[in-house]
Image (cartoon, rainbow, N blue to C red; front, side, top):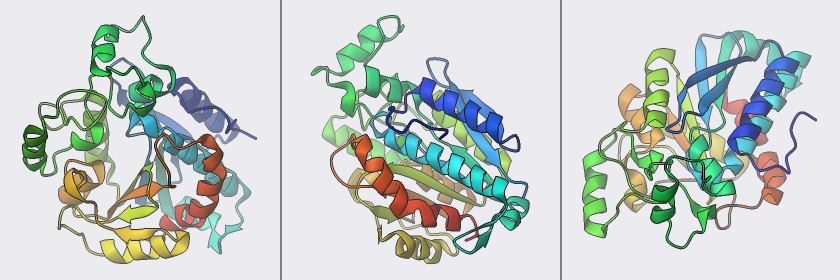
Length: 300
């Protein structure tokens, strides 16, 4: 077993696991696409050599670090299947490797995950600021990055509409929901946007918790085949194809990807319960999503 699934996916764990997968399966290429605010690497794995490219992104919110474990498990599973060269769900892994490129980025927000799992380190230069932003000192629900910006509202997708909601509700920097001063103000957001502008990715799936829903449009914008692909994925895992409500409609990674490239993008809300979901749920969630994860690679 490559991964200790009982271990919370803090940045060190994610980095060690990515390194381990790339060592065991030499055809898996490891890349650093940028640095977090506190200087941590934002890493991804590339598997395959095809012209059609699919990207999976997890750990956008700190408290949703279970999505990082989910994508690490998928990366190890997909790499093992590609190495074997057989079939998975009637899909030829040899064909997939030769005709698809899969990018798996398990943790976009490593600083936020570390805060949510361990609390802020006293050695952190932003320690006092982070402590001030979390008055109850319960960091398990911390979603933002180390600056107190919610990355999933920091993308250029109806950003000003979300700003109006912020002003109306008195939302400021803190554990969640603050969008930042301007789109891509955060190093983490800028890193993935710059990567996607260059990588020619044909479809993106962003993983969050919770709700067992799949969102497929960006506040009314839906690219060709977006709903059809979303419906196919929903049928495979039993999740509900849905539209986000309220402020969740604005500023997200999936929303920016759809609006920027007019290509299919999805938010997958994994599992049910209260965040952070317990790691005991990981096996069940992965079992439900496994067919959809593998099969989504051929849906573009």
